[in-house]
Image (cartoon, rainbow, N blue to C red; front, top):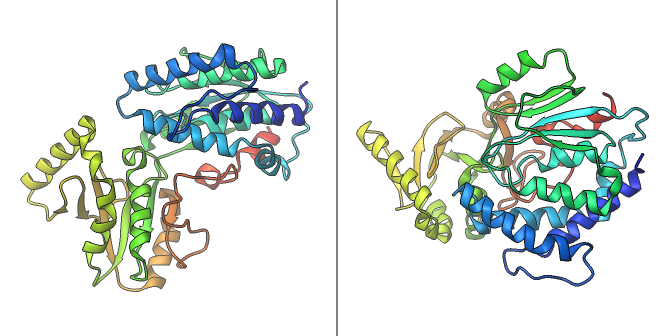
Length: 353
């Protein structure tokens, strides 16, 4: 059995390894364990991940690695684990079915299972299958006790005791039926919203552009919907978004922008757009790529009631002194380890299976 402290140490070493790969600078650092084996190999995996999925730009991959490097510090890992009883006497095999919308999107579940003392069986998305197996190999090198505890499979899942599965609302129904006899966390579609009150600064809207455009808006923490007061001047919003104008130079994003714009225009929908982003009045939460939906609200109390009623559809609420548990403008893509997806404490679940 690996002690909890040894597990924390291993992930902290992984965090130090990832710290060499930042958006600003990729630099090999002395004294990183097993660098001679893994540094160049991981650079190669980053390249392959880009080639395999054109949404996974180098900057987006490095942004993810940067976030995880910051999160996987001993102090953060201690805080993450300190309030949960993880002295597990009989470790289980926990299956994780991962999404593939953004790089390493399933890493938090992977971390949670292993740091809890269980074994993990990972079924990856074909869109994101290159980075995690390499990092798992690094973990096995820095902590030999992880050997035999990490399995990747492309086959049908068998021989497991519990499951964490992430998918669409449709696949979630299938998961709920298929895994009905196992302890499970089943995640569905969620989107993030921003509440505009009229008290925002120019800087707030510039920061909001990060929440909108990071990962091309493909993450569940990406803002896809605005709630705005009746007299809102969208010029303020578009001025902030303009800092990300170069996104249209990505061919896949540009194709989606052109396609969705054509569909909307043929349907005679009212649109506002600026050459790389469209906004459309719509009650839905999930907007297509290159599109933000918006909805007007009459008063703040009614909006708070609506957000509470729709909480199963919402991952993050970006706002400024509006509602409890709000996230500051520009911060949705910098979650803490304790920011559990869907608000379900994965460690609590894993401590009780």
